[in-house]
Length: 372
Image (cartoon, rainbow, N blue to C red; front, side):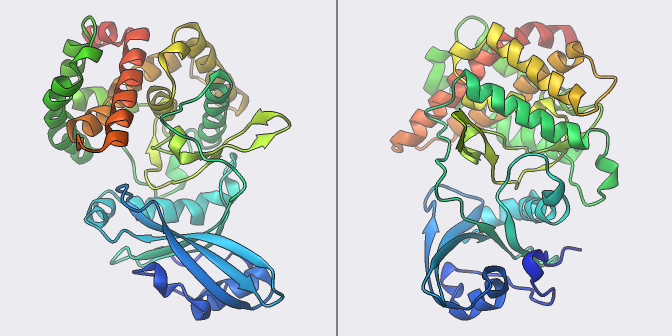
């Protein structure tokens, strides 16, 4: 059962959830945050973040004026006030993120925002998560994508995360796993297969060579593909590892990564995260030799973290399998696009083009024929 995290001496008997940003007032801010800041809070102003973009949580920022006149800010998340809430609860998104911050955040080997407060009500999944506000770091932009250096850093950071928990997921009884019969059938029947025809109709020009037949075949064999992609030694994965879920600080002239949004985290196969990042955030110019070289960075990082009995050839195979499994995201997006949403259409096209280039570069059609 989840209970409130106790950072900075936060009293454990404070079990607070929100249904609107306006509920985060001076009284509540003082109850939850005055110990953290070491003084009373005299005023609070809040504003929602990301309105209208279909987020699975409601997100807001609170600007706080402290008793000495200084100013601070925090970001807080609570249950989405849309139909997305029922989906998020059904997929355990809220409990996944709260469990991550309760059980793994202090041990997490990669940079993340620090949680100040976290509570979830087990029966209703109503929750409140308060995070430090990292305002001086630019966010990643999926439309802009990434360069080779950022790709390499993302693969390395993923290797650090996966290496820490490789083969250790059974130590965490609260973990939800990505590879389940129920979820795999849902992915195939409700998400992937219904999206294939609309995707082909809207973006047929992107399907060069045998890419159309490959994408259709992935849908037909989706359960089997996903099971193979996620089988074997399990680790803790982010599950939505893409540039839009990253902040990009500049440190000593190099871009690093702070990973946010752990709602889809859980037990799975490590290469799923890097296949997702590559297919979502890396353009066609980063395929071929660059892609293989950065995959070796990922594998070397795993080995450096103590992973044994996992060869580079196995890693490459799992990467190729997960490139096929992660096709579900562009197919889902492109199959349900509002054609009047110009940014949405551009994002869908970009995601699809990158994913198809990854399938082609890694000869996933050949692997599909060999396995099935």
